[in-house]
Amino acid sequence: MAGIYIHIPFCKNKCIYCDFYSTTRHEKQQVYVDALCKELEMRKNYLDGDEIETIYFGGGTPSQLNENQLSKILSLIYKVYQVKNDAEITIECNPDDLKTEYITMLRRLSFNRISMGIQTFNEDTLKVLHRRHSAVEAMNAYQACRHAGFQNISIDLMYGLPHETIEQWLSDLQQAVALKPEHISAYHLIYEKGTPLYKLLEQHKIQEVDENISLKFFNMLMDELKAAGYIHYEISNFCLPNYHSKHNSGYWTGKKYLGCGPSAHSFDGMSRQWNISSLDAYLNGIKVGKLNFEKEEENLYTRYNDFVITSIRTCWGMNLLILKERFGDKLFNYCLKMASPHIKQKLMTIQNNTLRLTREGIFISDGIMSDLLWVEE
Image (cartoon, rainbow, N blue to C red; front, side):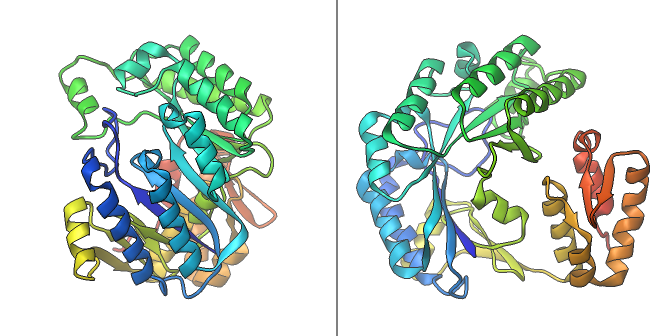
C-alpha cells in the first residue's frame, strides 16, 4: 500500500506563525492545477504500481480550490493510479471556507475525511494569529460537515499561544471534546525564524509561554483526551478507536508515498526527494517536462535513523525483531545500548519485543530519539 500527498500552496492570507510553503497568488491557481496533473502523470511509475491506500490534500489551504479544480486532480489520480475502493481521502480546510454548498461538493467528490484547522476557540487569540475564522464559524462549520454526512473529521489545535492561560487551554480542550471529532491533532506553537510571529517575539511585543506551563499544557492535553476516550497514538495525535490518520501513519510506519507540488516530499522505500519550494520554478519546470527537486539516497544508517524517528514517536513503538532483521546485529545492539539509560530511568520500556516511550518519556522524546540515532564518527 502507498499514499499520495497533494500540496495546494494557496492561502487567502498567511497566518503569522506559519513557515510551510504557501502563496497568496490566486491568479496562478488554474495553471497550477494543470501543472500538478502533469506531475502526477510524469511520476506515475514512482510507486511501482502499488495500490493507493490514502490521498491527502494539504497546504496551504486546499479548500481554496473550486469543484472543477479538485475534480480534475482526483479524476487524474483515479485514471493513472490504482486506488483502493475504500481509500482514505483527506482534505485540509479552513472553517470559513466550509459553507454548505462547498461541503456538499466535497461529499459529491471522493473526499471522506476532513481535517479542519481550528487552532483555538479563543476569539482574541484567533485575531492575534491572523486566522480568518471565528470560534462560532469553526463550530458551525464542524456541525455542517456532520450534517452533510462526514463521519471522519479531524480538528487541529495549538497550545503555548501568546498570553495563553491554563484556563484558556482547558476551555479549548473541553470545547474540542464536546464536538466529538474522530481525530484531534494538537501542536505546541513554534516560533519559526522568518515568520511575523518570530519578529513580534524579537520586538518583545509578545512573550513565549513559560516551559513549566508548556509541560502543564501537555499533561492537560493527555489527561483530558484520555478521559474522553481518545488514544494517544503519536506524540501530537489522538484518535477515537480505529480512527487514526491512515495517511500520516503511513509516514511513521515506513510506507511509500508520492508527494506532488512545490515543497512536497516523496519516499520510494530507498530514497527521499523533495520538490523545489517555489511556485514559479515548479511551474517553469513542469512546462518543459522537467521536475525541479533534490534527492537523497538512503544507506543502511540513514534508513535506521528514519526507522528510529518514525517508530519511536508512535504508540506502536519499535518492533525489535524487525529492527534486528532489517538492520543487523550491529545496529540492533547499538540501539539497545543507547536505550538502556532511558529504560533504567523509566522513560522507555520493552514489552513483547517492542521498545516504546513511557508517558514520562514522551515529554523529552526529541532528546531520546536523538540519543538512539546513529552518528557517523
